[in-house]
Every structure is written in C-alpha cells, then in structure tokens.
Amino acid sequence: MFGFFKKRRRERIRRKTFPAEWVAILESNLGCYRQLSAADRRELQEHILVFLNEKRFEGCGGLEMNDEIRVTIAAQACLLLLHREPAYYPTLRTILVYPGSYLAKNPHDADEQSHRLGESWQYGPVVLAWDSSRRGGKNAFDGHNVVLHEFAHQLDQMDGAADGAPPLGQGEDREARKPMYRSWALVFSREFERLQLKAAKGKKTVIDQYGATNPAEFFATATEAFFEKPKQLRKKTPELYNELQSYYRQDPAEWHGSRDR
Image (tube, rainbow, N blue to C red; front, side):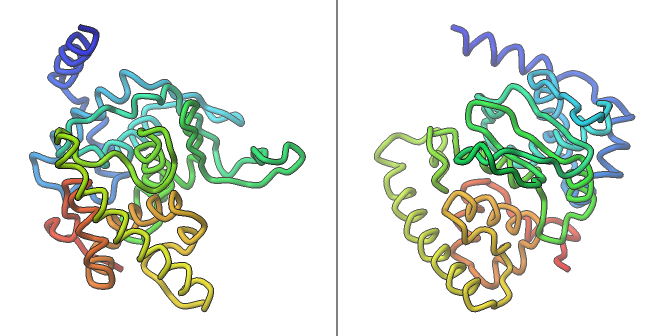
C-alpha cells in the first residue's frame, strides 16, 4: 500500500512544470543535455523533480546551497535513471556538498585522512565537491565525472553489497536474471583483470585506472567511460559496452552529435 501511494505521489510531481530557470542551468552545466532527444530531456526533467523533492542537500565547508548546485548534481544523478523504472536511490536521503576537495577520515584507520572529491555510503550520504561536480557536468566528454561515479556506487549498493554487480534484470523473474548475472560476471571479471594488467604496465586505457582498485571502482569508472567516452569504450571493449548498454538501457554512442575527445 505504501508503494502505491509513493508511486502516485511521484506521478504528480513528474507532471509539474519544470522551471525555465532550471532548464537554463541544464543547458549551461550539463554538457550532454543538448545531445539528448526531446523525449529524454523531458524524462530527465521529470526525474530531477522527484529527486529534488525526496533528497536533502546540505552545504558544507561554508558552501551556501542554491538551485544551480542542486539541479546540476541532480541532473547528473538522474541521467543514470533514464529508460528505467527508477527507485531514485532508495537508501539515500542526504547529499553533502563541499566547495572543493575535502578531508575525510579513512574508515579503516581513524587517524588517517585524505583529500577526496566524492564518497558514497550505502546507508549514509553521498558527499561531493562542487567544483568537480560542476566541471564534470560541463565537460561531458573527458571520461571523468564524480557525480556519475558516486551514484553508480549507489546503484551497485542497492543489493546490499558494493561488488561491481548492481541488481540486474529489472522486472524479470529469477530464472530470467540468471543468464544476465553469468554474462555480467564473465565480461566484468575479464575486463577488470585486463585493466589491472594495463595499469600495472603503465598503458593508456579508456577507463580510468582507478577502476583497477576493486570491482566496485571498476563498475563506477566504467560507468563514467560509458557515458562520457562511449565510442572509444565500444571500440575497445564492445562486450563491456553491451553489458552497460543493457543495464542502463541507453546507448550514448548513438546520441545525436555524440563525440569523444
């Protein structure tokens, strides 16, 4: 019953008018916005309305929150939800935003701190650096996007584990999902190992070599490459591209005017 009312409430929110001021923000700060079809732009706007209604943004380190910050970050997070039945990151309630990189404690060593651009906690907040979030949104073709990265972690964590394998086969029964997971595991494990080998040898890669850290980081960095360097990724690792295309139900390489730099 609760799910029924939530669905109805979200439908009402999606029918609201998207403010013209917010459209201007998307046109300025989301580099891929004009590449999307009119239908995808409208769907993205609808998801942003729901996302901003359900998530709380907090400025940290002296950052004063405003619509530009909220809409820019929400747009990138919602880009991952197009063409799906979105759950809108169900365990996420709060996005903390710093002006730039921030110091964070090592969860395994309370005495150790490091500068970070973003973090994703399964039952806690997403933390982001605003300057990197804005830069990543504006430059949609460099293969680096901290918002896509951290929200890919959120998708990965939806099944309770950050292991590089998000829930697959939305709407399919258990038997139908089994071959999907087998294919995903085969392709992702192989490409993860290849990235590790290339990183160890200092070879250039389409996927950020931070993805060689572990399977969760591989999925997050592969997501960045899928949306920001789709043609290169499809050429170098077609099977990996196909897995991501099936999962995200999008084909960025075919966006009108899409290009890789």
